[in-house]
Length: 490
Image 1 (cartoon, helix red, strand yellow):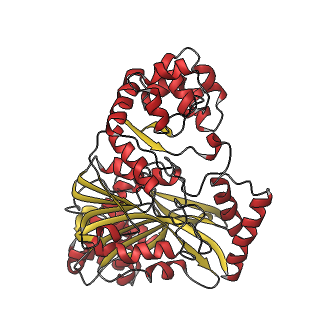
Image 2 (cartoon, helix red, strand yellow; image 1 turned 45 degrees about the vertical axis):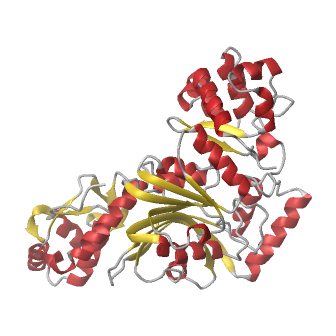
């Protein structure tokens, strides 16, 4: 059954939540830091204890966040203006006083409506399960550029998380999904947050055929494996990494000139095959592309992770059957691992589109969204200034440091590694040699690059200018070497 949360019901729920203080800040205040952190780890008892004297807010926390059964009178009091029978009919709550849907505060002042996860359900999720706010959706939101745009498309909106974030910088938003249940819950999310979003049902880009957008975001069903659909939120029915390939091939055609698309994707690491060559082959012409690989999982880890995600114990009979079928497919396809990461695409009229594939698997704290904007700006600057690169004055970014590791030798300490490290953003690192370190030491915004190279040759002998220019381009793309005047700040 597809839930029907009417505009009136959502307005009343919003009033009840605001009255009770059922917001992200309100929940944190009621639980306190330790109980809130424990709940995030999947340990509910500290939160349950903290809500004993929290009134209607405590009831809502136990109901929607802990999955407890609450007395009828307590539920009526907590829902306030909402008619309890109407709430039961819409699956907001069940007749026995439990949550029927996952409705939880999110970020600063939003609520998200989704299906109950396997922990709160007490078992595996159904095939049409609508996922709530998870690590993947949060990571995509943090990796998305937030410059103001006129039109934005959210492909496969699910519960509507990406569209919520888009409301902070997009004038109009269109969201699509092939699942009628997902569209119903996304509509409830938008109504709760008083957002006007165009919702369209259909596969991939079919609902918006012939239209173009300034920005497209997508958290597609990118799980890699046999061509099957066990769960619509993660499985595409396309074999291997075909869903990611399809999105990357088709997305640019729906971008306006200069428009940007950003998505999560997975790709196979096959025996004897370079992953970067694989993903680059998916690209159409006229697209700047940045592939950032965040993780690589071996087949065993990959299968176990996604089985648990659906609430299936890999040790159970069902888990063993599914795991073996999945692992057999990986073996037949010579798959050594599965890569996962972020893809940023920009439609460009330039004949010299920039395509970069790189690893970013170390830990970092800053969101990647501002960095993706910076990357696009820097790529555009390099394209526009290629012929004048040698005449440009550069400055090392203030957040870049040079790390040196030395070992003890016969003549004292001898450098083993020289590494540039940007201390902000994604913490880019570049290993460099001594001549490059000397060249960059002169980048203080006063002397053109060609003069610095000439001085370096005078000091140490012949220098490979083409190699030096390649290093300069890499450092500019990563925001470590800043031209004067710099690219537009994000």
